[in-house]
Amino acid sequence: MKTTTFLRRVLVSSATVLAASALSGPPGAYAQESGTATPIRHVIIVVGENHTFDNVFGTYQPKGGQKIGNLLAKGIVNADGTPGPNFELARQRIGSDRGEYHAVTPSTGEYATLPQPYTTYATGQPGGVPDTRFPTNLPNGPFQISRYVPYPAYTGDPVHRFFQMWQDVDGGRNDKFVWVEETIGTGSNGKPLPAGGFNPREGAISMGFYNMNPFTDAAGAAHSGDEPVFKALADAYASSDNYHQAVMGGTGANFQAIVSGDAAFFTDPVALDGNPAVPFVNQIENPNPVEGTNNYYTQDGYGGGSYVNCSDPSTPGARSVRSQLLQQGVTRANCASGHYYLVNNYAMYWNQSSSNPPHLIDATHFTLPPQSNPTIADVMTRHGVSWKYYSGDRGSDSSLASVDGIPLFFHSYCGICDPLTGYISIMRNPAEEAKLQNYQAFLADVQGGTLPAVSFVRPFEELAGHPADSTTSLYEMFIQDLVGKVRANEELWASTAIFITTDEGGGYYDSGYIQALDFFGDGTRIPLIAVSPYAKPGYVDHTYYDHVSLLKFIEENWHLPPVSARSRDNLPNPI
Image (cartoon, one colour):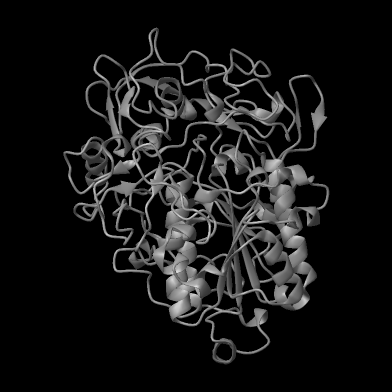
């Protein structure tokens, strides 16, 4: 399947087929008056972090007896979160990968029980130790997190990197999430295998999920269900059970896809002109296992390799991934010759503002040099469509006091989640850079009726839902406040669609199908909720989507061309 325009099935009146009951006049008259193909004149895309569809919506029961592809519907778990009749479908297996990296690995056995989850760096917990709040004998499959800790509790953080996620999904079997956590985790950073072996200190936290239904916890206390805000929004508006992260792996690469429909690449660190160049040796990915080890990557990690020359099939890791593409009938890897693509997280060159000292670019500083790729922002500016990118705590942001009940402690900024700070066309053009603003500016624009046609909103780091330093309950709090403020402006609300998602799955287990599109992905399913007066109440859409589908809706709604000749928004829609 290919990416598609979202809203075509989710809205009562969608991109090209408008229901007469949803409009005061015929579609043609409205489009002529507004310049848009639908009644939607304001799109707000809110991107939190690091949860798969099954992690959030694994037990959601939609209205009206609709079908849904989640853990509960597949019989993997029961409504109360306990193992279901088809629990074995999610069984995790032990793999073997020696000598050369393989995206699909042979299985040598199964886990009798899951390894105890670790704390990693969960707020308020001791770092990198077994999380004693969870049992040591969890059944081999998905487990309900909130059976053992309160729903708002901070928990550990699964690995979510590019080559690791290819191995997680294991050619569609989705059975190596735990093995990858146990063998390589977030990477070696180019270090030799430690004496006594390598412990990534993650355990099986990747198999956790939340439960929207009533349940009884391990201590015998009754609960009404987790994620009340997400459930209420899905019941009242529309959602998708087939929306995917665009790139295998983590945050940085997926935010690049969200704004460009493409992947970033290493450019000349001296000329700073956006032309492709060869990275520092220690920053080139090499997921081949160190000799004598089982899946201990040679050069990988947030302080190690993250660039891949995937145009060369002999590049470590590239051969196996490209082989997987061919097995799915995908012959176009979309890897330009001589380009080293960033598949994980490095800092943006400009540090929030072009007037601030930029991040250093050398072998010891993991910084993405300035990018020359076109973005959806460039396309919108060129065609007169207004836009802004609002990022929590950008600059001096006092807006958090406006989010009821959340203390000022939660102010934080995520540089890799502010991707347009990496682009020459934005950061060397004061008028364009001025469109990169903070959340306080978003609230002012909502209240003042000055919101642009397209808004990207990135919450404060500690409100974005990222495991360990945030929670889904905090992301829900942020979303509830944002939706409430937009709805309070009745004129704005009448022409708005708010899309709520996460950047990527965070390494959590998901049972869904993934369509290979090119070397970079797609990746696991992630949540998507469409909140709009035009949304079909309680509707669950099953059409295949990824992040670039949102770009395609923007393009169709405002009559825009694709971002570039190679961006994913050129792919056809599903039949």
